[in-house]
Length: 102
Ligand SMILES: [Zn+2]
Image (cartoon, rainbow, N blue to C red):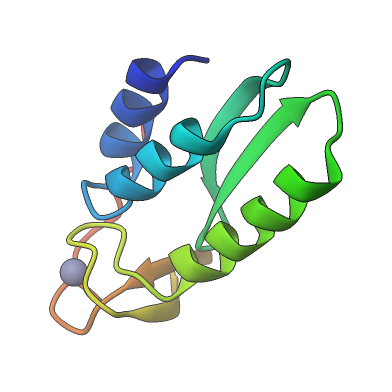
């Protein structure tokens, strides 16, 4: 998955709030590492890649935690909420907006 595809996917399934995090990830991909997928899971931004890299793993861990505290729609501070059985990251203003899943 390249940067454009990842951003398109996150914008479609979540919103625009995390797009700069996607940029951040692609800016820091170490040479030789391939991003397989970027997606939302349990209110966090998740990335799968190969091969395994310890420093990149810990960078992604930080991004993941950062994403959980940022509204996936607008990028403002938010928190994890349950919505129809899904865990999502939303600010108070967007907390009750319907899910945008597929
Ligand atoms: Zn919001």
